[in-house]
Amino acid sequence: MMLRFGRLDVQLDGQRATLAGRLDDSATLGQLIGHLPAGDIAIDTAAVWFVNSIGMREWTRLVRALRQRGDQVVLERVADVLMTQMNLVSELAGAVKIASFHAQYLCSACGGEHN
Image (cartoon, rainbow, N blue to C red; front, top):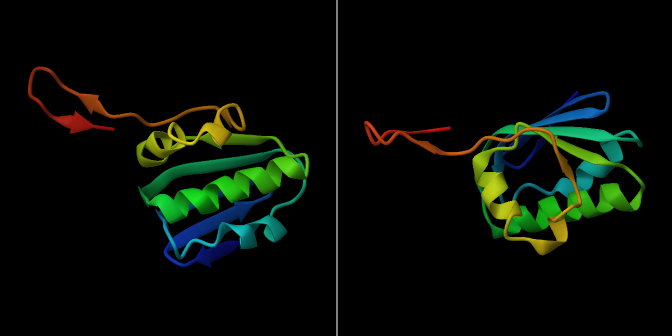
């Protein structure tokens, strides 16, 4: 099932959600809770390319709501922009299990940056 929350696309496949686009003021992730089955949830954010403070508020609310209903949240291929923001929110420390993530790489030989 494909859902759209503002500028964020969410592909649901059983216990797995794949997010793509922007986590911003238009991404009302609270609406996503009703579409996710109870139980452990895997969330892939590799295609999230923008996160702002309102998007982080929505992300934090989503994680909080999933944990309150007893779900374990496993993040896969966490986008570097989301990883950076999550490190700034103390409530998220230990709230999710991170299976894999993207990080910036700087080549010392050529100065090129890559994920």
